[in-house]
Image (cartoon, rainbow, N blue to C red; front, top):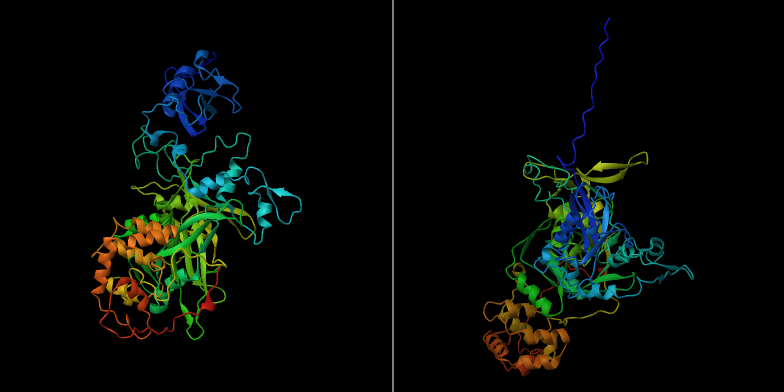
Length: 615
């Protein structure tokens, strides 16, 4: 019987020369990380040309090493393939420019645009407070840990932060940076990359979504973590009057209200390398408020307000809204509704805060995009556990900002404390979003964020009022009306301006004119806008210079304002109280009407000063 033996020769592997296997090599430079596509058989010279093109080098003005300590240099003279040098997919190489970053050397290709350079981050100008904190020695050396005797701790040491009074849950952003840059390389290779939930553009290996997607262009899944740092560590209103006038709208109408916080960022010394948002004024944009809703309307004056604030040394640092329900009008108490059993911020409020933070990014030299996170804060005026008015400060995390920016997060209709990560559709690919939770057996489990507890997205910030009030703007017993309060019968016009001037008892022009809402009216009114001629006055208010203010007062513009006011008959301008005399003495106007001004009585919603508290 014959025995047949079937011999099967193994199929030889397809050589790389026929179908080259591409691989991704990461190259890290002092300005960020780039991913270079190469093949195993690619020569070093070809690879280095790709590196030069990707990083914008015109000639051999750089060196590439296999090790961070500048050993194992790769040169074109080696004339070897990447495979022979044992450089494989996913490896990290290290690039060092031959000349210092930012020098006048022509090593870099000047034809490469700022946006296409490795993030362009070294070219950005950070905020003054960031430039100040970068130079502080507290993060380079150590800071004394109170309560630890002679023990010294770094500003990002969790044990140190937990032993502060009160304990600090989040390290400051600059402490976080010191933590990243505290190694032997002093953070030369630190890159704070912003999260992207969108498909990377330019992938040509397949049809566009929804017909195709690959691992190169697919955004990574996101696992939500509670952020350990915060960009702002404290919110402080300069004085009670700022917040008190804002609350007056709710007191008089019972409707919720919203405003933008204008102020400045300063050092917060209670936390190592901390930042404080100081609020000097609140601008109230056009809006529609009810007892349980708010709608922000388009504001044609928004750009002008930002411009005037900048000339006053201020910027938009946050937003504030009320969520107040009167509980007992006789006692002046309000309902305590936001707590751990309900929510601190609703999903819709988190999305709104995320939108605002994306509009006000934090300029950062360590990010390839030139920005990372935001310093824009959220303040809620709501009832506290003692049924008094409290001010609670928050930010949303950088992960939340990314979800909002890329339109991946939705609110739940019947559960304000829950958000919902969108599902992918033919119009939009949405990466999976997860969060970690503890089950009934005490085990850590990963849950899909449909729905999502918004507590994972929130960072709380202490909100305070100083013991010694600060006044960027003057305080008057009869202040100039706040903008966009026509529903209360409080309008900004030359009649109200004349009334304000007649009732102001100060003989110092700078004190009279130093009112944020008055300055905005002078610039934005339709009769006599002073946008192009008010810079000197704004400088006088910013520097508190009475001489400059008096110089501007002699201008033709102010003379015209005086004439416009003189044509309005003002009740009480020359009444028996004599309050109009100081104003008439420098304005030179005599009113024909002598009717005394009346003041509106407090309504049942007015809260006594003793109800103020801070959190």
